[in-house]
Length: 226
Image 1 (cartoon, one colour):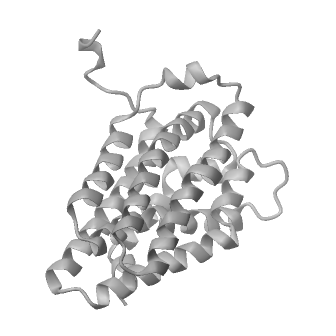
Image 2 (tube, helix red, strand yellow):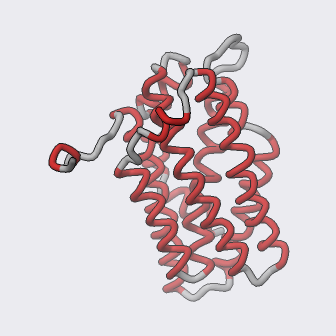
């Protein structure tokens, strides 16, 4: 199956995602709040773009079931995941003006722009492959962290881990994979290659996103602008 092939192709990158210092500290509960707050702010902005990309996939889908899935996922990205972010921002005492004052990171903008460009210019199968890592990689990381934290009480990031290790989220991942596998099965070789490249690039951006939060990434050119 196509998804099995691209998952195997990205195996080393997935290992790097799991072992990244951000996710290691997230699992240990030792991740400092500044890094997590930075991540939450950037992820909130990414999710706005991601939801629009999923809505575009819904519009472009010819199968009613696929259209329904993508539309529902767009709603979940805005309603469920952003509610998680809001909860953490309130817990950290970050006000709306403070959040607004945080610049969108280069990586957040790049990942969002990549998906938006794919939504506008690429065939639906390529778009479906491009949005899949945000489902699959997060569920994979969430499940691994849930296993690592089993029996732990008062984990500071338990709500995050619970969201992405949730059974309903896992079911949505399976549905997204099934859509991609079905589209790949009827695609020509060039389209399949483009699908694989889109999946790999999005998975690279997943690693980069966590890495940017770990580094508290800023724009290196900011000092030359007023």
